[in-house]
Length: 114
Length: 117
Image (cartoon, rainbow over the protein chains, first blue to last red):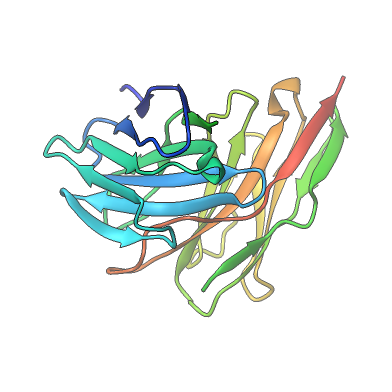
C-alpha cells in the first residue's frame, strides 16, 4: 500500500505571497492532520480533517487554512506569507478508528519564505 | 493541556550496544496513547513503537522496547543492538484516547541519537 504523499517537496516563496500544499493519505485513511516543524518551536499541530470537516485546530492564525476533499486528499493554504512561516510542513493520515489511531506521516514539504 | 518532555537533546551509542531515551509527560487523563517516532535526515517521520495506557505490558517491536511507568508518567525507549541506521532524531508523542477526544499528537522536543561505528 502506498504511503502518505505530499507535494510539492520544496517551495520557495516571498513574503506576502500565498501557498498551497497538498497531501494524499494512505488508501482507506479518512483523517488527515497537518503539523508545522521548526527548529525553534518544534512540532506543532495545525489542524485535522475528517470526512471533509475540520475536526480540530491548533493555535495558529487565520492565515493558515485547509480543506479536505471527498477522496480524503487534503490541502493547506497559507496566505500573506511571513518569514516565520518557513518550516517543514508534515501531513499525517490515519484510519480514524475507535481504537488506537496511529498517524502515518508523509515526507513533508519544505517551505522557505524569503 | 498535555505536555511531553524529552530531557536529553543529544545521545550517542556504540554500534551493537544498548541505549535508552527518556520521555516524561504530564496529563490529567487516564486513557491515552504514547508513541515514539524517529526522524532520520530524510525528515520522514517513522513510527517506531506505540503503547496504550490501559495496557500494563510494555510494548516491544524487534530491537525496540519501552518502559512504561504510568504512575510516574514516564515512557522511555530502549534500543538494543544499535545499528548505524538507528541514527536519527527520536520524538516521544502523546495522544488522548476515547471518543470525542482530540486526535492530535503532542510531541516532545526530540533526542538526536548518534550511533558510533
